[in-house]
Length: 63
Image (cartoon, rainbow, N blue to C red; front, side, top):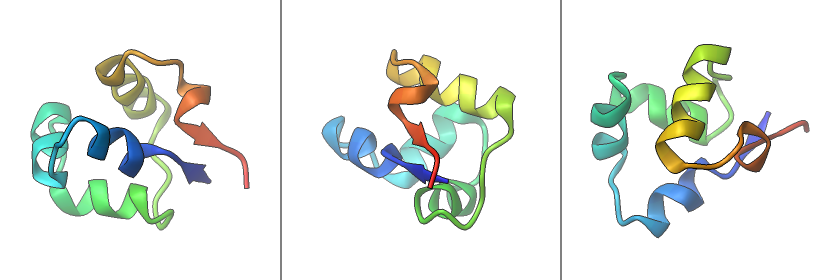
């Protein structure tokens, strides 16, 4: 699944580690999501959307 996570993170000047800490996941998980190697669970996708204050559809798109 394609996503805008890296762009949203960069807009806030956050590192992958910063985002990982905010979400309670590993930096490696953030990297895997950003590169499309891992699709987050629905609860994690909602946490990500809530953190950025946007709907899930504004972050994650179908391929």
